[in-house]
Length: 339
Image (cartoon, rainbow, N blue to C red; front, top):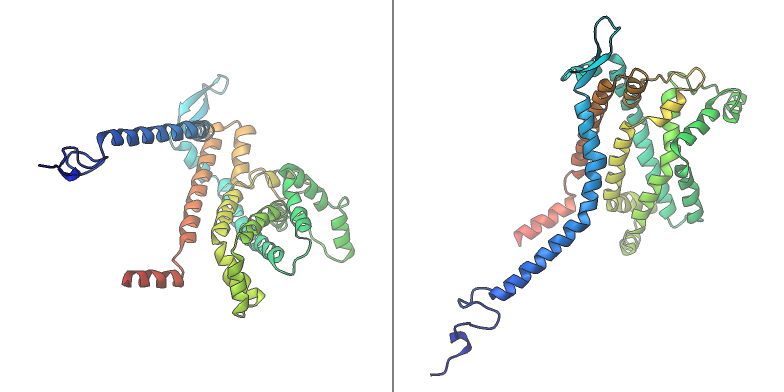
C-alpha cells in the first residue's frame, strides 16, 4: 500500500504529527526570535527608565517624604532644631495660608488671559504663514522664533527695563501720547507678566502649528478650493480640524507651563514699587518658604499640592480634548455597522 503525504506520521512538512500547528523546531525558533526582540527592547529602554527614576520618581518621592516632616526647636529656642514627623500638618498649613490660596487665584487670572492669547495668536500666525498670500516665510519664522531662544531670566530683565519709568523708551512714548500705564501696579502686574510670557513662547508654539499645517495633504485643500471654499472657510473648517492633535498638545503644555509660573514674576518682583510679592504664585511661595524661611517641609508640601493640581488639570484637558467623534466619523461608523 502506498502512503500519501497526509498519511505519513509527521504529516506535511512544518507541521506536527497531529497536523494542528507548527513543528516543535519552528516553534523554538520563533520563541528564540521573540526572546531576542524582547531583550533588545529591554536593553534600549533601560537607560530611559533609569533616567526617569533618577530625575522624576526619586525627587517626587523625596518631596513627598520631606513634606511629612517639620523642623522644631527644642527648649525655649536656645537648643538646636530637630526634625519631627508632622503628617499632613504642612499641607494644612499651606492650604490655610491666605498667601498660598491667593497664589492660585493669580494663576487662574493668568491662565484666563494667557492661554487664549497664546493658542489663538500662535494658531493665527501659523495660518497666515501657511496661506498662499504669505511671503518671506522663513524670515518671519526666524523672527518670531528668536525671542524663544533668549533665556527666560534675560527676557524678564529686558522687559523690566522696558517697564521702568524714566528708563524705558516705551513708557516715555506712551506718556508722550497721553497714555499712562503703570506696569508694576496691582492692576498692571498680571498683564505685564502675560506680555513677557507671550513674547517668549508665541513663536515657539507658532512653529509647532506651522509644521503641522505643512503636513496637511495639499490635495484636500485643493479639493476645498475647487468646491468653492474661501480662505477663511478652508482655514477654520479644514486646516484647524486636521491639526487638532497639535492644538491639544500645545494646550496641554501651555496649561502645565502656566502652573509653573516663576521666573517672570520673580524678576518683576525686583522692580521699583512692584505689586508682585514674594508669594505671588505658588511656586514663589514654595521658593520663599524654602530659602527665605528655611521651612523645607512647608515648601515641599506646597510643591506637591501644585504638582497634584497640574496633574488634575492635565487630565481634565486630555479628557475634554478627546471629546466626541465628528459627525462624519459617526456616520461612517454607522455605515460600517450596517454593512
